[in-house]
Length: 481
Image 1 (tube, rainbow, N blue to C red):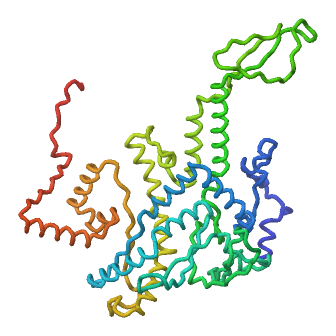
Image 2: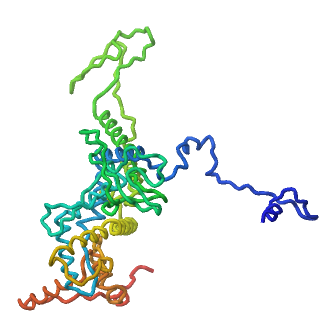
Image 3: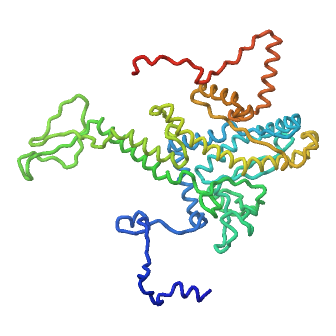
């Protein structure tokens, strides 16, 4: 093997007659070159690992700046709130899919009653907001004896600042700040400070070692090996500051143009014939009054030179760039759809709604399925709460329903739904799931309504028929030759 490598790469091998020597081509990329023009732009590029790049101090600075913007910038606050509301909505709803329909309804009612008692939807919205501005969100499964439900499981939300390990050794390869992992990379335990480091009441850095089975950790891993999250609005933080600075500068320019501010000047040369005046001496002017000037001096009004006419365009472009890191269209981030038409709105929202579905799927896997398993472990201990003979929860087929997103044109959506059902390309279960509803519960409720309407002698409106495009009459193309 070594002899073959020597022959293959030996530069001293004699060239055969009639053959040219082989030339080594050294290919390169323009983006890999460092020049005087791009040296400053790439000055902060590094080769740090995910853990090193997202160290405790870096995460602390990014969290503080993101929280500051969300607390003081109305656009940042609105974007975070809108994203959380669109993803979580009024909360997920459980639907069991076992063969026993009565058992499914009994368990669903018990779980939904518990979810309402603990405020599951509100806590999920808070967790999703924290993930946007803090980069990650934590919740601990605890026992709450003051709950008015048979199952006393509860969620205690923890800020990312409290998940930390004081005195963490830099050479501990199986731990990052606040989390300890096993050899396979699975979290074993979380270190949670008993007090928030920013409460200002104590310098106590004692922490509890909480098993990983009792901790929910929501964050988006953008790199392999990343174990802690950074704010999702990190790329937009400089843009938020830029937007506020430009808004203040535009306001100052408008105020300067509205006020009657001026400057006294003279065309006379130095030591000329003009009367002496005190330099930088302000003159207070009264409204609707004439003003006399010293001899040789003139007065001119200050004019704002700032291009206020580009303010709306600048703000639109910056907001569009800000919302891009969250896959949010401009009209949702700005709360303004005046420049949109129907087609562009539908197209922009497709990416946004797909991102929402991905987020909901992540919440189901990381949080909801684990919450359901923990709830079931306690619910089986309560007599009469659950039906018997269902087996372990891992064998329960189930799904989660979320709030639907209303269609811009309900008539078009209804026609499309009727066409899909008529052509057997969908099912009632899929169509109701699009609306975040349980198809069995909706059909039972509709059957109950129909029975009551027949009992009261009320006429049932006939179902509207949906005509196919080929069945619609074609108008004469008058004047379209």
